[in-house]
Structure formats: structure tokens, C-alpha cells
Image (tube, rainbow, N blue to C red; front, side, top):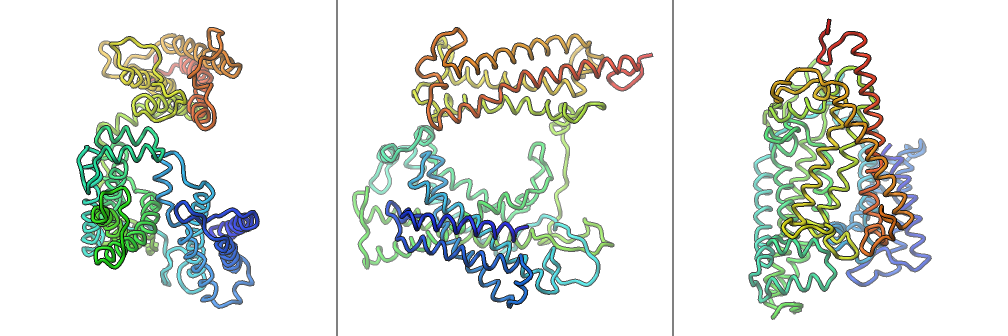
Length: 559
């Protein structure tokens, strides 16, 4: 499957490169400048090499060629794709905080190249494992019947752990420098106000100034998350979630979850940092002149380069080492069929942490577990209602509380409120209450919607009368259906619920991505009423059938 995907990718990549070369568009950029046209033809050549290698793996005629030739084609194209995806991490950070990239075409090419690198490496591994006596599942050589299992979680070797700790320490000067600026201090002759002013001039969105106002630098926050990722790659909790994790204690971490950002970060930060500290070393030795940029002098610029690129280099190299160790330690292996899965030794001698339920996790399961007789569609509908309400609440919180620029008018978006009520508190309270109301739909399939829970005094254990549940649910379903359907129809017609034209600043008057985000967040509310109505009808029918057969909602006979 991965080989065919690699072949399809090669076709798409080649067409993209050919179109860019013929139209004069540049897929590769060096900062603000466009790359030479020859690089577009290099993309076409890379796609041709990748396509030839992938076709040799997929088609029978590929076996006529030596395995070394096919592997060279695949890995060579993969290396070119890794080089083509350089800078993708920086583009993602820029997109998150500035909500734009320097060149959408170049960013799309970087994403396409990164996907191709993964597919080509996977195809090379499949071809290598299938071309010899190695097991096609685990790449090991064994004669006895075996089955594929995952090794138990364990820490990385001591040398890898200390390398990771050194990489974390290398990032601390960078975090300290950026945090000092966020707190308004002066470093290298530049104050925090200067940094914030420069960020606004470069078009940073409301996320950056908001975090800076709280004393948190966004890039320092990313560095802290990177340290957490690096530690997870060398500790057992990076393979199985620890016991204190709510609802997920003891569960295995999907292998791709830490590996995707780790591979991207290592491929970007390690070469970027190596080149940067080489340049800084030449500048410190006086062999090259370091431009001062926005700093008072070249010496101040060198301080920032050493703190920033030195941290990138140390962290990137440590991340590469830890990522390779994680790949080896979490690789699935084959065990003899006579052995139990638990008998497979851990990667480095650690014991798998036990999975504990806990009161909170048990309460979560009890609140969501459906009673016998609930059809599958009803379970899906009940679980979908809270998720249909969630995007609108997140949109309100992001705009009003975190000042994310989702509103073209630039207003807070909280409406006309009393002076004593902070809009942030109102929006958070509104979103929480909406989610709690949406969660009542789960009660129409769960036991607590048919039998009063134990924490309700004088009613615990008693059956919930059918009208007590059906009447409010039916009224709510009718109200929500009429309200949101009418709002949507009038909004499309450019009218409010009162029949007046939409005022300036109404989200439905937005344009571009502002309008698209608002519609994506609020359109699911149209499903709230119909889903609740269907669940109410199913609840009433199920309760009436239980009464006709003489079965108590709790499971015992009523006769």
C-alpha cells in the first residue's frame, strides 16, 4: 500500500514541478527571494527518480534490477525531498502566529516534499524487507512461527537519555532570552517593547500580542513543548501514558504522534542550527562581518545568534538521536506463537506501568455507557451532540478571551452586556452551560437518564418518569430546531431574527477565511435539534417497550 501511495505521490509531485517550471512559478524560495528556475526542474527530476523506484517495487519487472539500485533510487529521492521540505517547521510556526506564510506555493511544496520523504522511506523499507529472508512484518530473520507484538515501554539507553538532557539544557538560554523580552526586560540592547513592535509591523495576529501581554513568548512556549517532546522520546511515558493521566492512564501512545513532530523538528533545527553556529563562530573570530540588524551593534546580534541558533543546534541534534532511539525501541517484533504477549522483554528492561481505572475514569465511563437495547445510531447521535456544540464555544472563547482575530470588525464580540459583567466571564459561562445542556442528550441513552443517580437525595435508584425526560427534551429539540434553522435561513437572506438587515460587525457579514471559520464552527448547531428529537423518540419507544415487558430501567422486573 505504501509503495502504491509513493508512486501516486511521485506523479503528483512531478506534475506540480512541471507546472511550476513551465509557468515560471518558483516552488523553492530563499527567504523573500525566489529560487532559480533550475530547482523547479530538479523537482521534476526527483519525481522521476522516485516514480522509477516506486514502480520497481510495485511491478514484477522491478525484481530484474539489483536491490541496491532500487534502494538507491528510493533513498536518493527521499533525501532530495528532505532537503526540499527544509523550513517547513518555521512555516508552520509562522502560520500559527501570523496566520499567513511568505509564499503559499512554497509552503505547499514543502508539505508535499515532507509527505514524499515519508512515503519513499517506507517504500524502501518494504522493498528491503521483502527482498531477502527477513520477516516482512518485523524485518528480523527467524524460522519458527511467530506473531507480531509491541515491546513493553521502557526508557532509552543511558547515553541517549543524557544526550536528551543536554539538548533540553541547550534550549534554556533561548527560552530565558525570549521570556525576558516578553516580561519587558532588556537583552542585547533591545527591550521587550521593541520586539513586540517589530512583531506587529511584520503582521503578527492577536495571538502573539495577547501572549506577550501575559509574559509568555510564543516561540518560548514552542521551545518548552519541544523539551517535553524530547523527554517523552527517552522516557517510558512517551510510549504509555502515566497513571495520573485522566481517562487515558496506561494506554499506548500512537507511534506516529511523537515521531511526526520529532522527525520534522530534527530535520529542520539540526541543519539550521549547525549552519548558524558555524556562521556565529566565524563572526566571533572576526572572519566575517555580522550585520547588526535591529540590534545596536554586531556584538549584540552575535549574542542573540549564539542563544538562538546554539539552542537550535543542540536541541536538533539531541532530537535526532532520541528519535532514532525511539524508532528502534518501539519497533514491533515477532514473538513465538507459544509465548504470551506480556512475555516479550521491554526495549530496555523497564516494566510496563499498570493501567488503573480511578474514580474519575469510572465516573466518565458510567456517564457515557449506553444501557442495553440502545441502537448504534442512537449512541452515535448522542455522542455527536456535545461535539456539534463544541466548535461554537471554542470560537467565542478564542475571539473574546484570547483575542484571536476571528472578527473582521475587531470588536470583542460579546454583545451588549452590563458594565458589571466581564465579557470574558460571560463567554466562558455561556460556553460551559451550552456544553452541559448538550451533554444531557447522552442521558437519553445512558443509565442516569432512566434511573436517578445515587447522589440525588430521596430519588436515588428510582426510575425516571418518562414525561420528566421526554417533555423537556422534546421542547428543547423543537426550540433548537426552529431557532437555529430560522437563524440560518434569515442569515443567508441578510436578516436578523427581528427581520432587520444584518448590522455591521455581524459574523455573517465577514469575508474570506473569517466567514469560513465562523460557518464551520456554527453550522453544526443545525444538527443539535434534529439529533435531540430523534433521541427523544427512541428514548420514549424504548421505555414504553420496557414497561410493556415488565422490565425496570435498572434491569429488574417490576412485578
